Length: 103
Image (cartoon, rainbow, N blue to C red):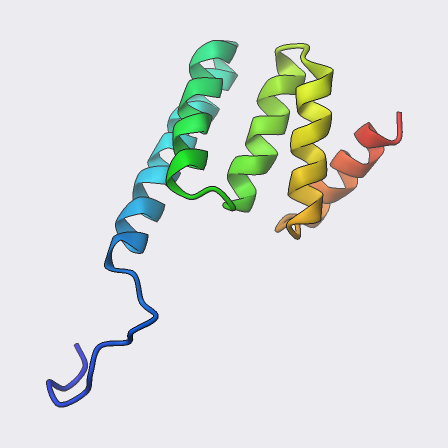
């Protein structure tokens, strides 16, 4: 912990870490549901993660993968485009997304 004579960072959000941890737990649930081909459950868990941390890159990518697995190509395309527009965090995933969008 910083010394007590240092003021707290005014830009820090005390709920950010908790929201991020909860969002990542939701994403783990979503991935597990996707592996079981439970697309509705996966989409719901992913939506919870995106509600907690809207710009989380891995949530945007996972939302696209869930939609693709469920056969909803329009939603998958929109999610991949949003993920790419926000700066993808996975080079292999970016390559895969660009290839799918080029179809």
